[in-house]
Image (cartoon, rainbow over all chains, first blue to last red; front, side, top):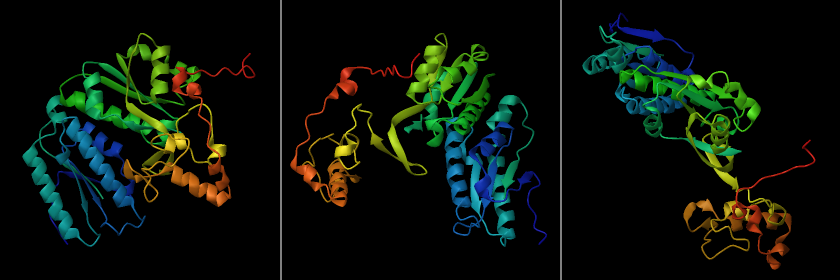
Length: 124
Length: 222
């Protein structure tokens, strides 16, 4: 499809978003990610029945935690796509990257003095 | 089992924000089952606190551990070689564990990380409900296995009261009337005649009315 999207993202593949734990999300921020997006299957289409619904709840909880610790829950987002939606994937990566660029480096990188440019992580 | 819920993060941050070295101590017992204070929750809290300290520009160390049970000295003793290195401990155990940890390490600041709620069951994951109030004198044999102390809002021994409507309690339509449950269970068991004989007043000395309680089992002690 030769779709273009920002190179600043790092894709971490998991078998199902149900595998993504709150800890994975928080540790990404601890390690300096400026933003994290979780990309799961469409709701109702999970091959493991409810993996993406569990992920949705965990992302919500992690967003609350990020708000409470001063990082900002808006740096974390979840999207639901099917494997046939490559175009939309590229679009949301651009959207998310744009949002993170607007927000600027994560407060963690600002505090630790390691903030040259914004990046985002993607989980599929 | 004992059921608890995590305390709000703001409350915990408010307690430990001036500490430089914090230990989060989970408990692998009851609070792990209700996903409030096990190793997983200890790691999440520790990560959240590290994020908080780092973004605030503060150098602080936050570590996590989890003990098999915090209501036993033998397991609490596992902290003896490292606890002195911390300014404060956040215990994710129930109130029992928090107190026993504080009792054992009496020079250490110990904060509770969960709100201990009740003795209950796991109806589903994330749905827990009360079944026992540990009154110290079990009457379940007479009430069809449904406890009026834990499940009737008024703890009535001879119910139901006038607030029972369509099987629900007047305080909340989501709460089943404990005495309706008792009636239905006794009916199933063919023991409705129990309603013909009033239950005698309960001796509440074995509950909290007798002050803090203690069990001494001479058959088990040396």
